[in-house]
Amino acid sequence: MSLQAILGNFALILFVLTIATGIVWFLDVFHFAKQRRVKADAALAEFDSRHAKLRADGIKTDDSGRAKLEAEILKQPTWIEYSGSFFPVIALVFFLRSFLYEPFKIPSSSMVPTLVIGDLILVNKFTYGIRLPIINKKIVEVNSPQRGDVMVFKYPKDPSLDYIKRVVGVPGDKIVYKNKRLTINGKELSYQALPDYLDEEHLSYSKQFLEDLTGIRHRILNDERAPAYVQNPDPFPGRELCTYNLEGFACTVPSGHYFMMGDNRDNSLDSRYWGFVPDENIVGKAFFVWMNLGNFRRIGSFQ
Image 1 (spheres, rainbow, N blue to C red):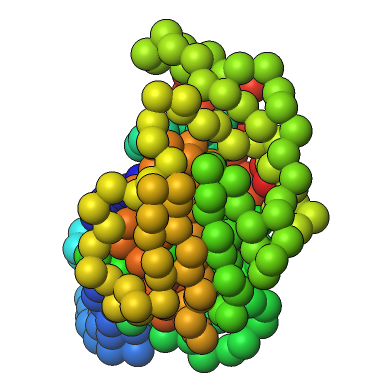
Image 2: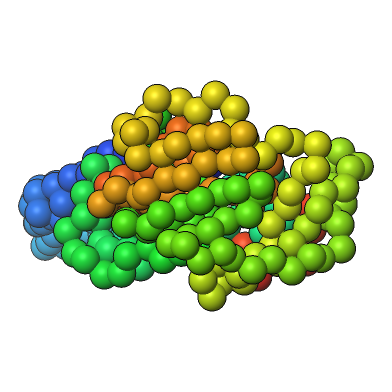
């Protein structure tokens, strides 16, 4: 399932706007404003001189226009005024979404029942390390993704797209998916049957289970009509580390990579099909639904 940022490559747009408005603000503070001040001082000196001469000739003058003259000369041009007003706002938004939290919208059902179509989520950008915006290069190590984390990342086949899945395997893990059940490093996960899940959009039911992913308990769905085997996996990098058969597959996660799967197991194109996610593709950890316009009860944290 892909996630689209609000306006395509929004980080790049914000970066350009921040630089552009910042340059205008800087030039105004240190250059244009000083020019206007010099011009205003000259105009005021001329105003004072003229009125002083008139008073010396016995002519009564009105100095009320002095303040208006000064205000008109010192007034910022519209383009400078707007740039100066928007600069701190744009810069703050750029900083927040680049280094702290970024919003995304869930457009498809591969993470149901954890996340549903229309969920507006927040992603923690610093929990897996601080990265430079635009180029996504990590400059400070913090934590590594753990099994069970819901993670946003750049789609390996097209890094312009953001995807969201659950971390199932970390570097070095041996992942076995047999008859729709996971085994990690030789230990089979436990599954607790739950009431069937109703897909209200398609009016169909799926088998629902509580999966214990090495301590992280979360719900998954299985479609009894879907086969256990992976159909037509791509020839992805590291494909030789995986074997596929009619019962499922087995993969060993290479160093610096992660194995991702959707919670809607039979309706998710994930690492089973297109391979491992490299560390440099990580965007952040999804942790909170801040809005769903169709269902306010969706608001809250999730695992």
